[in-house]
Structure formats: C-alpha cells, structure tokens
Length: 592
Image 1: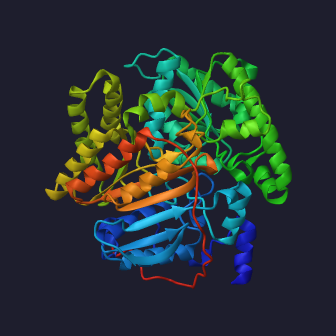
Image 2: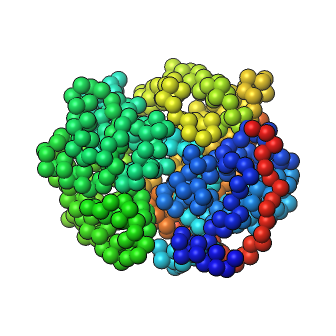
C-alpha cells in the first residue's frame, strides 16, 4: 500500500485511502430507520455524516471534502469506516471522541452527555500558520473542518441562502434606499463562486428579486448548480452574461446568470462597458488562495489547475497579480456608485497582503465586512442567527410540517414584536412561508431559518410535541451553523466590529462549545479556522435531536444565544500519531 498512498500524497497533498471508500452502498442521507445503531442519537449523526459526503451535496466527495476547497469531514476513508463502526456500536451512555477526523474511541459518559465531541485543527498557536497546516495535513495529524463539514452539520447550499437573502435585501435598504416592503426588482448584483457555500448567492438573489451574475471558473460546479435549479441560466460569454443581467434588470425580472469564467475579467469588462452595478461582493475561496481557492485571470480552469500542480510558485505569483487587478476593478465600480462588501472569505485580507489598493490611510479596509455593516447590527445584535433542522424520516411531508410549525410560531411573535425586531420577524416569516416553493433541498430534508432565542425555543418545543403526537414521522435534528451568535471568533468576519481589543481572542467560541456540551447538546464541535482561513477563526456547532426533554431544549439555546454579547478568536490543542488498520466495517443501510 505504500506506493498507493505515496501516489495519493503526491496527487492530493494528503493520503485519503481511497481503497476503503464504500462502493457497496450509495452515499447519501438515509431515513433514520436504515441505520443499525443502538442509539437513535448515534444514527442521526450517521445520517448527517453521510449527507456531508453525498455526491449531490459535497464538492469533492471522493476526497471527503464537503465544501470550500478543503473543508474535510475526515482525513481518509479508514477514519470514516471506523467512525461509522463506533456509531453503530455506541450506547447512550458513551461518547465518541473525534480528533481532526480520527475516531479516538468510545468513552463512558451518561445519557445527557454529548454522543460525539469533535475537534478539528486544534494546534499550538505558534504552529498555526498556513505552512504548518499543509505540513500537518499531509502527515495526517490535522484537518481543516471548515465550518460545517467536519462538524457534520452541512445541509447543502441552502445553509446560507437565508442569511444571504437577508444580506442582499438590507444592503439595498441601507445603501440604495429600498423600501422595507419592496424586493430587488431592477437591482443588479455581481459576485463570484458557485461552490457548496457560495452557490447560495444565485438562489438568494432570485428569491430577493435581483438580476445577478455569479462568475465561477469551474464549469462542472456551474452546470451542477444549474442542473439542481440554483441558476436560471449558464453562459461562457462575459458579454452575454452582462447583456442578460442588464435586460432582466430593465424588465424588473429576477435572473441568476452563471458565468463560466473569471470574476476579475467580468469586473474589468463591466468597467470597460460602463455597466451600472448596484451591489457587488465576492465568495471565491480566498481562505486558501494558493492551493486552488482562487484562480488567476486570463487562463482557463484547466491551465490554472495544471500550473498549480506543476508550477506552484508561478501560480502564486499570478494569483497575487490577479488579486491586485481584482481590487482595481472593484474600486473603479465603487467610484461609479456600486456598494461592495467583503463576504468574510478573506478577500480584503489577502488582497491587502499582496499590496492591492484596499486600505484606507489609517490602515483599515476600504470596504466593510457584511457582518459589521449589515448582519451584525440588524440580526446578530438581537440574537437572530441561522437555526437549522433536518427531518430524519427523509420525508418531504415532514419538512412541510416543520415549515408550517415555524411559520405559526413566527406569526404569533410578529403580533407581539417591538419595533426594533418587527422587520426581522417579517422577513423571516416571508422566508419560511416561501421556502417550499423555492426548491432549496439538496440532500437531506433540511431547512435554514434565522430566528432569535424565543423563536428557536418555541419552534423546537412545537416540533418536539409534533414528534410525540405523531404529526412528524421521525425525529428532527436541531442545530445551527458557525455563523450564529457567539458561535465563532473571527476578527475578519463574525467579530470584525469588536473594538475593545478582544477581537483576536477565542474565549467565546470555546466557552460556547463547553457550555453547550454539558447543557444537553447531542454533539458539539470546536474548529480552528473556517471560511476566512486557517488560524483566523474558531467555531463550534451543536445539535439536539429527536424527542429531547424541554429543559435540554431551553438550556442549551439560552447558553449560546445569551453568550453572544461577548466576542473574540484563537486556537489551542494537540495532535497524536495514529495507525489505521484495514477495516471494512459492518455498516450498510438496512433499507432505502
């Protein structure tokens, strides 16, 4: 196997043990009853893991990467098989410990303890550089879990659609004078990225009513999103994309045009043609700029990929030059009135590092983070954040029922809302009422909804009752993503507007994970790094599943939302050498 593994190391930069990839069953989220687990909670985690690796959901499923270019569920397929074996065997008085994808083993615990505790990328601060990550990842001792890949909480591109819709609507309200009751008809929007997370932009733009172009260098990703119904159309012509966007805006029609091409070339062409663009952003994977997260201009995707493999230093130089051009084009469009924001993907950070014109005289960024300018003051400051759930029955009708439950709760809340949150509740109610028609499901029967503390608790308790009385045909996994209040310490995104000096500390996310673990969460996860890059953020995610008692539902939500008034970043931890025996495992779906 040494020759085989060396070939993988040279090809992928790490050993993925593809010989152990399951071929005896399809990789997808099965109904909970298909999992031969002793614990229903463990079965729900198995479902979530498989959803993260579903080819319809994951970016590079055979490499165990869910999204973001390197957001890993496990480091290799042996780890997957071992983890599934442990989850099959565990009781509700045991906890599985996961070290950066490696299942350390089952440990005695108790029924109210987490069934799984996950850490990803925990390293000593002085050894937390990008070079350190690449070396340790190649050695198989750490992994980049992104935000919801390594925490088993990814729900497909839907995961950030609601937050993106809120961002677009409020960017127009604040900066373009849009009325609260109006949509984005006639408003143009340009951005980039059609991957696992960035792909949400197209759907969000059309839900909001905008005419938009999303540039994507990877043709496979663009056509995949179109096939899934997340793009109106796809073209490989920059001028055709621009013409379609302009015509739709003039007619007041929403459209999402997927451009197979480079975002920088698109921006430069807009400058040349003097095109009016109202809103602009970027979601290239600039947390990983020199390993394929961002491609140089004036080259095809295939040429860039070959250069990355064969001439990495030349690739790096061309990426840096492209970043400078990118910033220049954005500046030119902003001078014409476009509102641009950083989407927390490290665009401004990486551009500043190569000398691009993105800094003010005082050293601050020219453009705001969407968190500090929009989502923070309007949502996070009031406890509104991304609440998500998955119907483990796999039944679309269960998802419809949960949508109706959530809508009923929000209507009651709206009637008693104060002026400072009434608009947020109205937006959220409109979202959940339209969710079914917007065809958001890719993979598991899941939903995302921004909600505050009261909303989450009431929705959870109502779902719990619906499970008990048989309205819902199976348990519901209740969770959140990294972007939630108090969930992440990141000075370039979630905590970008914390000015007391604590934006670079990480107590909040660590305390959040600890607090949720002993307040009844079914599993918790703590990561070093996320959407803005390795050693630039830490995060945690949690889940409470099935018919959990009311006290647990209340306690852990109060913990993580109540903690949102404190904020920070960092990393700590350890790594251990491991040896993976060949293991083919007992697990396979029993039905479905």
